[in-house]
Length: 308
Image 1: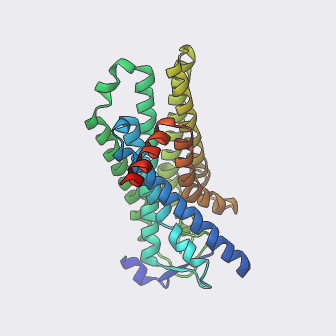
Image 2 (image 1 turned 90 degrees about the horizontal axis):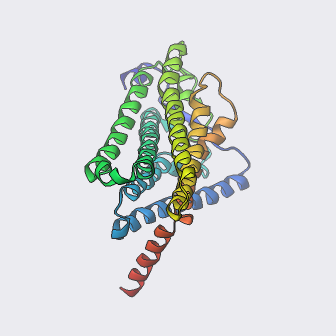
């Protein structure tokens, strides 16, 4: 953080969603409701999977970790955005800004890898069912989750190590509700072309390559499913549809923002809200409303709580 002391910037101004006071109050109520729904919905999934022995399988183990990381992804910036709707001056300290960038890339990078792990789980379950129990062992599942977090941390450190030492000597207006890397590095008092290329080769490449890998994996799985006609395959097709929907909703905004970092478009702010707020909300809805096992387990959990 020494570089920050040499510059005149000690805080950044977050523009967020603008509008008259009445609209700001509406935003406050609306996003508060969304955030509470995200936290409660995803934690309910985690609690349901932990409490129901029938859901102690690799797929649901990975799903519970996805729900947990969705809570983290929505929490790194959303509470501050909600509070800022009631504030006239929306600022964040230099250290707070760097912390937001760090946690954003930890959670987003970790979720990308976790979605890849979930695709691998479905591939083994459908394409190699006889070897599923052996391949997707408890140790393998734990390694996939730990590996996802480690890759997210390494990815985030690689982004932050260059950004934290940039000279910020004047402009401090961030046109978003949180500190996003493409917006912050453009405020540096130096040529950031090389850094933008590094960001493109890191964040953009990871997002794009993971998305392509997932699409290819799901295409292979879908082809396998189409060749088999049974009740089990119908269930697998429904699960795959849910997975593909989540992948598209999450990766679409990320790729748009980070694969083309050289231009800041007004739609970027909307997309940032989408993948940090709406996607974590949609995940529990997509996975639970289409999943009879999870719904049944939730009903058992509710009856257990009522009877106790």
